[in-house]
Amino acid sequence: MKTILVITEHRRNELRPISLELITAAQDLRQAGDDKVVVAVIGNQAESYIPELSVQGVDEIIMIKDDTTEFDPDIYQATVSALIESQQPAVVLLPHSIDSLGYAATLVEKSNVGFATDVFQLEYDGDDLVATRAGYNQKVNVEIDFPNKDLVILTVRPGVYKPIEESATPVVSTQQAVSVESRSKNIQFVELASDGDVDITTSEFMMSIGRGIAEEDNVEQFRELAEMLGATLGCSRPIADAGWLPKSRQVGQSGKVVGACKLYLAMGISGSIQHMAGMKHVPTIVAVNTDPNASIFTIAKYGIVGDIFEVEEELRDLIG
Ligand SMILES: Cc1cc2nc3c(=O)[nH]c(=O)nc-3n(C[C@H](O)[C@H](O)[C@H](O)COP(=O)(O)OP(=O)(O)OC[C@H]3O[C@@H](n4cnc5c(N)ncnc54)[C@H](O)[C@@H]3O)c2cc1C
Image 1 (cartoon, rainbow, N blue to C red):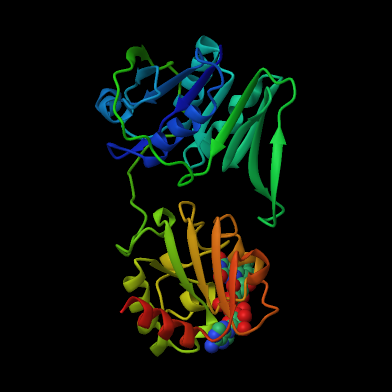
Image 2: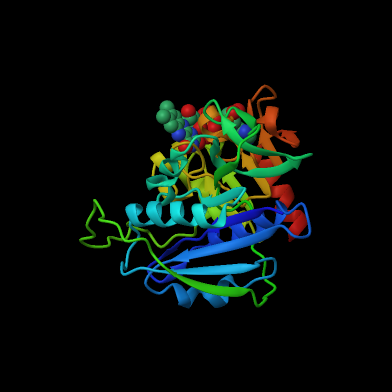
């Protein structure tokens, strides 16, 4: 029997979606019938997240009450370390987020612990856990195994696992957070400036436009096409740099990784390394480009060597 420990995350009184995604990832790691998924929630209102976290596959929820209203890396570090001590899990799953980057690595203080970050695939090869993450600036996928490790700690990329919706009634227990003197002080919460635009990281179907659209006046027809197709409109960096679409729509290394995307339609995008960093993992990539040697075709499942304006018209005719 092994225990898979999930550390959830919340902000401003809202459970972050990755918390439920981690439960799905934990479920996938069950090998034997008596393997246990234990979910921990830390915070001064920990109890308010119990209904949302009570989904199928969760065996136990541990509520850990502390007095802080905002995330504190020292409290999480001490509390999760204590949980590891008491639960003796084989695997700990954390969100790959700005919060966990503040303490995850410090959990690996003991010897014989495996660690990998930004993991987007997990499976067992026999008894060996194999985690997949990107390497060499997203150019390759790297499979990491952890031979003979007692414990493996992983941060998991958001948007990869689908949350379980079926509710359940797991055992709920309560613990006090470990008392620690925090090295940081929360002064004020400042929300990252948002233009109120869609969050492209959660879209399952993206249509992105690149420099192939030639001029700003052409953006509108592709915006319309995206709407007709039910796709979220994204772009390469030159389009965002030119201000033709907001920066929040940029896919890539200095833009966003479209973690939840299943279908990516690249229109007039050459496929630079930096663009591919944000979408290379998508299972179905369709590329339209006039240049048969464009790099995007090396990762596309389906490619059309042709003019995006002609393809756009064809698609409109098909839908309309
Ligand atoms: C540090 C750094 C970070 C970066 N981060 C990012 C990032 O996050 N995201 C990003 O996208 N880029 C990023 N870049 C920029 C990146 O290097 C490329 O310059 C950029 O991705 C190119 O965008 P593009 O494919 O739209 O344009 P281009 O490379 O100019 O490609 C345009 C493509 O359109 C095709 N085309 C032209 N007309 C048509 C037509 N009518 N029909 C069909 N196809 C046509 C051409 O054949 C060409 O392949 C970054 C660069 C650096 C240095």
